[in-house]
Each structure stands twice: as C-alpha cells, then as structure tokens.
Length: 436
Image (cartoon, rainbow, N blue to C red):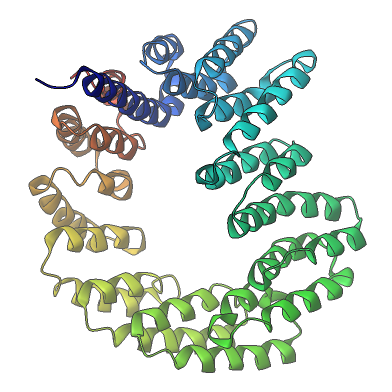
C-alpha cells in the first residue's frame, strides 16, 4: 500500500505542473484571443487554474487589456493569490512585482514592503540566488531600481550577485546618460568587477551618448576588453567596433581575426567570425570577414552543424550561401534536422524555389507531427486551406499528447499565425491541460 503522504505530495506536484503549463499556453494565446472579444472566457479560464501562481500569471497578463473598474477588481484578485502562495515561493514575489504598475499610489508602499519582506525570506537560502536576481530585474524594468539593488545585495553567491547587479546598473546607467550626468554614469560603470561585463555595459550605453562625448566611455570599454584573454576579447570589443576611428578599428579587427583563426574547431571559429560580422558596417571589412566565415563554415564536416552555421551567413550573400545550404541539407540523414534547416531558409527564397522547399518541409512534418516548433517558420508561407488543414493536425497532437509540457509548448508554437477558425479550439485545449 502506497504512503498517503507521498500520494498527497504527488498530487500537489501534479497540480503545480498543470497550473504552470496551463498558464504558459493561455498567456501565449492571450494576445490573439483578446482582440477577437474573448476576454471573459480568458478570465474564467484563469480563475479555473488550480494553483494561485498559475491563475495569477494569466490574470496579470490580462491587466493591460482591461478597463476600470474591472482592472482594479482583477488587481485585487492577483494580490489575493500572491498572498496565498507560500512566502518563500518566487511566484508570490513575481505576481506582486508584475501588478505594481496597475495599483494605486496609496497601496504602493505597503506592497513594496511586502515584496522586500518576501525577498528577505528567500535570501535565507543560497539556492534562491538566481531567482532573486531574476526578480530584481523585474523590479528594475518597472523603474523600482533602488529596491532592485537592495534585493541584489541579498544574493549570497558573488558571481550571481554581480551578474544581477550589472543588469540593474544597465537601467541606472542608461537613466544617468539620458539625464546627461555622464561623469556619474562612468563612475558607476567602473564599479563592475568583471572586465567582460563592464565592457558589455559600456557598449550598451555608448549609442545613447552624443558622439562628441563618447571618447571616455569608449576608452574605458577598450581598457576592459584588453584585460580579457585574447581568445575571448572579441566578445568585448565587437560591440564597440562601430564607434572606433577607422585606423584603430582596422588594427583591433586584425588582432581579433588573427586570434579567432587560431581556433582549431571550425564551428566555434565560424560562430566567432559571425559575431564580429554583425558589428562591422564598412563594406571592405565586412567582405573580408564574410569570406573568412564562409571558408570556415564550409570546412565543417558534420552536415547539420555546417548548415546551421551557413544559415548565419545567408543574409550577407544569399545566392552563394543558399546553394551551399541546399547541398549540405541533402547530406543530413535525420529528416527532422533537415526540415529545420529548410524551414529556416524560407524567408530568403523566391518562387518557385520557396514553394518546392516548403513542400519538402511539410512532407517531413506530416510524418513527424510533434515538430510543432516549425509552425512559426512555415505558417506565413502556406495558403489558407493548407494552413487550416495542418493547424488541425497539430492541434490534434497538442490535445492527444499526455505530456503536459509538450501540450503547452505545442500551443505556444501554434499561437502565432494560427487561422482564426482554429483559435477557440486552441483555447479549449489550453484551458483544459491536465483534464484532457
């Protein structure tokens, strides 16, 4: 006879999974259902989710679409659900933070006090460090930056703490730059311990600074970049390249390329060159790096890896690269991998090549109907009849699979470009995850 306590725990875990997955699916469908007048049905479905966190997540996602007094009423529902969640659960904090923009000023202080109290409870265990960092970002995104920094200081692990702090500083420094307080912004940047993160932070704010005032920031970014081992320096220098004088840029590019070409792994070498290619705007520099990246990608011996890296280059010289991708795709034995490569090519093809390629992808998809993640890549290129027919088959899979995670992921994949005639079918499946 099974232990009753274990059965109870198992039931609770099942409900948590149902709540999480049902919320994921409903939130994905929500932007497509609200404009069609299905707000009431979504509210009802949210309230039927068996966990406060899952239910609250969908209600919060609906708030931007609601008018008063319904918005205030739903805010109260969310706050009630947040308070009913176990105090150390990140879900409570997430709901309270996300509802902040929608509550009255008179209630703000009390809710912020509650948020900080929950964060202090979570900070008692280092296992919550990553989640505290994520929640600090949620606060910073909503302009509660000082509160976010207080939460960051609660994080015990140094790396997690510094990573979270850099994310918050990104908001603070951009605010200082926008206010014209450049000296304070630069001093704040210099407090970042890790060279690479400091360089990334500088690269993110340089475009916001008037051109005649950028020099100090660029030099600080280069100083940080040159403190990094040369094989990783490209990650820090790349974002700064567009803002460097031509002579300095050429010199640094030469150093970076020489370092990258020493990498003996062709796929890694190609990825690094592609990363630099996206930062270069001068035609002669771009042509040189493109040629090196194409040679590197062409030397990859595993067909699916080769095709994947070639896809990163298709923007720069479509005819040459597309031809090689097709040749490489034919060498891929796994039809699912082949379909993913061909589907990713569709935006770069013209007729009749696009129709022929789409037909090959559809043939593979119909034999592997669980590949719902292909839908966002192919749905825009199908006619209405074809889209409805395939959409029905994919929704049947979403309804019939017993894996809750697969159900939610399938519905998230299908939420974009789903024919209107199938929207309510998708909603029914989402609202009944765990019941079907």
